[in-house]
Structure formats: C-alpha cells, structure tokens
Length: 79
Image 1 (cartoon, rainbow, N blue to C red):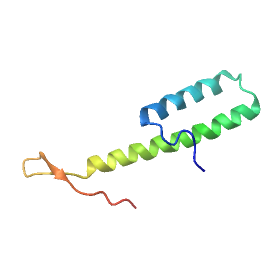
Image 2: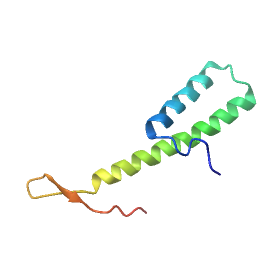
Image 3: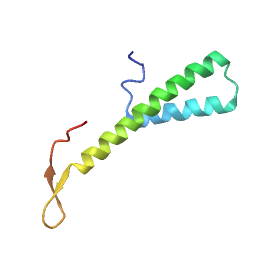
Image 4: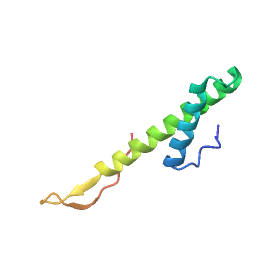
C-alpha cells in the first residue's frame, strides 16, 4: 500500500513523525485518529530506519587506500 509519506525526504519524514508523537502525547486525539496516527508513525519510523541503514551501508562501502583515505566506493549488495 502506497502512503502519502512515501516520497518524503528523511528530514521531512522525521519532522512528520515528531508532529505525530507530539499530537499523540497531548491525548487530545480521538481513539480512531490516534490509531491512524500511530499506524502512520510506525510506517514513518520504519522508513527513517531503512534510510539510516542504507546511508550506513553506503558509508561502509567507501574503500580506503593504504593511507586510510577514501579511494572510491564499491557497490553495496543488500541482503
């Protein structure tokens, strides 16, 4: 299922997640709204985690030369 948050940048997704947490913490949301917000927040959290994991993998894929300087990258094989 595609989500309207699918195309958000990491920063925008994190900002939206913070808004959701703030809204839920106030306790003002009706139960059905709170459930919907919680589901959206769960998807956003996973999306942010996936992006952080991908960034870490890209960083780890940087090859170093004999002096420890970046010498290029190698493709990251996920999975």
